[in-house]
Image 1 (tube, one colour):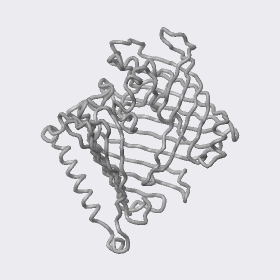
Image 2 (tube, rainbow, N blue to C red; image 1 turned 180 degrees about the horizontal axis):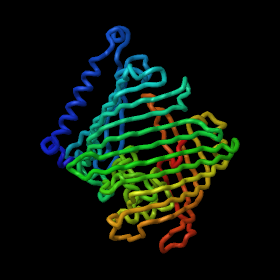
Image 3 (tube, rainbow, N blue to C red; image 1 turned 180 degrees about the vertical axis):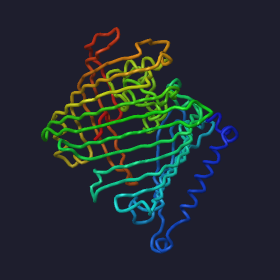
Image 4 (spheres, rainbow, N blue to C red; image 1 turned 45 degrees about the vertical axis):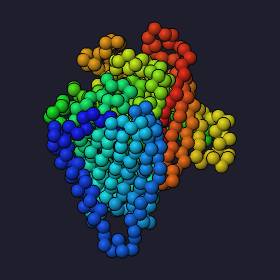
Length: 426
């Protein structure tokens, strides 16, 4: 990775240096704070696994991932470690990248199924520097892990340190950000089916850059009509205050750019061919999720513009119907790992942006209300890796044949779209 200004932050941002030192010291102290009686009975084990990935900056990225835990705790005990280190075979300026997450339960606020913990995260990879500390609390009734509530309070220092990894530089700002976050998740069942809710509050406190607030709300409901038919509904709302960094603003079709870092396919340019992105052939699930407008969004991005909004409210709906291929999967031994769903979809959303968000290549009204509809197929695969972690993905092929605002094109048109990740994952 070509981190051109990586070393300078130690002088310009002394607080980050102190935060990094604090994380290192806290990690050391937590590792040393093993229960003596437990240490006599159980060993601490490290489970390694090779890791290979690709982006156009690092080339083939070779690495090693490691899970650490007290033996016999099955990823549910003290001193949990999830780490990785990688080498870019194109040997950019700084070819070594890493990720480290260390989680320590807090006995005073923990019980069976209701753990409270502190988590330390340190990461420099694909041109992004993140140093984070979080306090997490989970509430779960009995043994049912599908019904729970989780609250995470966090503080992080983050910065884009190399634009070379970003497929669209205009979606990013390279100021240091001091982010205070609150993330609440609810997962439960209603009379009609699975229900999920997620509320995220993010506040930038860094006085060396513009302060801003971002709030997102996501609600998902599954309605099971019978064994073969079902409806999935999703509601998304997003608000960004004045001066919000572009990576935390909203597009019509794609997730907030900052969240592209959470997925290996979208984390760095070149994993997905950029010319395919420019042509609007790939949809990255998240945000308002009006998948039919992927073509318009990425046409603007490929021309150096960006259709970004400070406020949005959207609804996504899918009506699932049976298909014979998925029936064959269910009747075979691979039925527990693969699934092919077929569905019609409808997306609609309201978008607002300040005049300063107008782009030179596409000037639109400050307020927009648009919709799309089509048919789609989703192939899902989930096979746990050698470390026991889920390694699943969803690939969608969708045909958004109708747009309410199609520009110079016909509202009805054959459009082909490949999606990465499920739009409504329940």
